[in-house]
Image 1 (cartoon, rainbow, N blue to C red):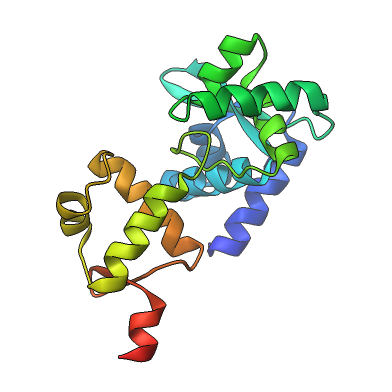
Image 2 (image 1 turned 30 degrees about the vertical axis):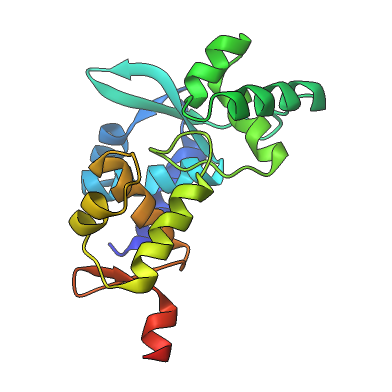
Length: 190
């Protein structure tokens, strides 16, 4: 099954789903799609806002639920979310939710209303200073992830760097070829 048809099959499963929560394993077994593919598609659907990751677990597996498209927060609440996030840039959505006494889904809705994109595995914001430093580093030389981590002085872990690099490649901000990262500028102008 190709990625388009697996995505559609998973979307159909979610639409028809009669249970309140489901796991990647349940979807994988029901649709006979490899677990890795299902996890990737569920992650994409989370970022699209069609489903949400719940706080529960079933036999060690993360549980998902259909997202409530009507979930919105007031402008005042959205501003409280922004203020807390700006004061504590490393704070996760779950921590923000706990501090403000609301659900993580409400915090996510607040970020969407504010126009702040949140990506799985990243904190509340794409830290532009880190992105700019990475871009500046690979603008001047082709570099592997390890070279960037050792030399760019980003102050983040190797795993977090991987998330940033994946995001930047996905958004077309940098390129990844021959196991090295670089900018489009270097390719076009050398």
